[in-house]
Length: 451
Image (cartoon, rainbow, N blue to C red; front, side):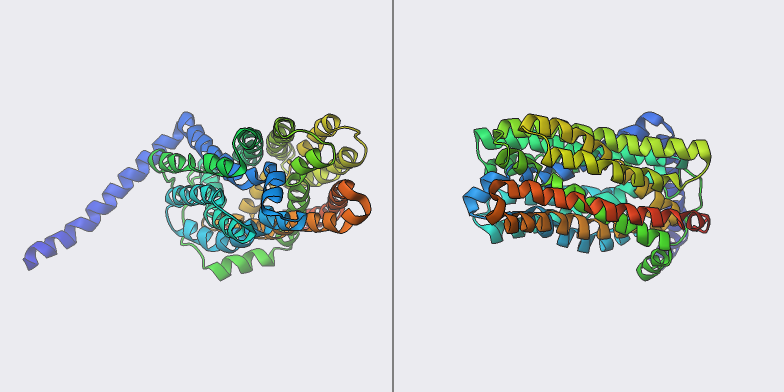
């Protein structure tokens, strides 16, 4: 018996290593086919659409949930923002660490299953506390989606196409808003808000199975033919990023950008219904198609234009200039939407321009983060960026907008919401300052990124 064991010990490791090399070669060959590469990008994008459907459908259901559970605007802001963001940001970093060490495809599949199930559970809630905990559970699942997906996309697309590929992936933000808003409006109109949560949640279980069966885990650094290395420790990654002054400004700029985006976006359906009296089906149609469509176009434009400018000039600082420009452009369009447009239809149409400009930032900022770090730091880099972005942006943007609306209501009635949203938009000025400060140091930080 000992001889048999000895033979197995001497033969199995080389055999296993040879099998792994063959599997890795097959995966590389599969990704060399552009059709498969874009199929994987498409599946990951659909995952992100599902992510945002389940995250954002609560917004179009706002007036029904508020009426049924007797909530204030501030409480709703906590449900649509803080309840989700607290756990999302807390778990995002350890899950990203897991993704830098392990199989990213499997992490994504598990995450989709968890958040889909918890979204359905939201439909069973009977009070604010139960719905808060259910939203907390949605955040647990969705924490494992973006960092490993960002890492995979950066491994299967070359560097000069990275921001464009990430912009396609980021379609999920506004694709989810579009589908969730339109679908949620019809479901709540013909059924109720509880049914809406269940219907949009459960199909995600099939999507989790699709990810597990179709997506292949790519080798690290595949697109750039870079040699993989041992992943650095968590504290080393965080310390590495903190030492980059540009990343500190970039992450805070993204957080303030998201503060405005979520602060006004999460209340836009309520604004159209409460301030302008738009029926719920029209809210779903106009906000979903116009806000979601504008965001989709803006997301792709931001990634495409930043890649175009970088490839033309050779200056990667354009990955920051594009978000800087978008932040300032969005301010007048948003203010006109909330304060000037006289009707729901005109406000919804004009919001297209604010949504378009406000969406330029995400893909170039993710790409910038990946250019700053090493291969085994990409998921963690995305997680740290999203930790700051979502904690401040998603966690406090809707909540503070809601509290300001509550504070102004005794003086302005239903119009309090429009003034609260206008105040939130002005945070973009602060945001633009951090993008500008980032441009002053990020070029040097790009140059000293790990090989």
